[in-house]
Length: 113
Length: 114
Image (tube, rainbow over all chains, first blue to last red; front, side, top):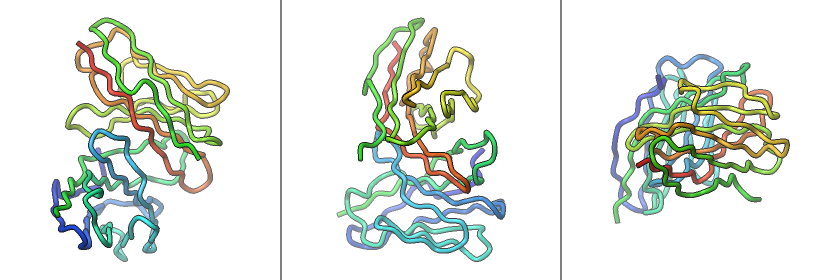
């Protein structure tokens, strides 16, 4: 089972920041938080990942709470092309043969004009 | 740099037939993962290959199998197709390393079983 909980859907106005929450209250100390998104019927696209510190790249920012039990993905200026299902995944570092990603149902983000 | 590629993009088969799906990883990546995404459901892990060996498989019957070639490309074979095998099949590649690796996905093959 997925170790994360996300709201099933969210709306955001074009040009505004989209803040997508994720709860992972059972996360272990060495587990990473990963974010992917999937635009309709396409392959998932990697967005960002983090362990403890906040992270930023050209696509988004990832804010992880100090207790690491939740995180927020921030798309600073959402566009219509950001409409997608966003997945938050918790995974351990490489450990033997357990490298699969366990996916929940994600958050369906609709960016409206 | 080219991303992960998959072929064919769409595949239509009838129940009982066999399907072969192909995946080419990002250049330099040695690991290939296969996932199944049935309509309206999350991705389910199928298989993981690294350096030509099957390293792990998900909770799927043995009629789901595959292999990885010396150039690290991979095939997924599904025998005795059933209607519920209709799904989007996704391949991801990664470069195993210390710490954590990132899996990068291809566009998928949509399999329809009639």
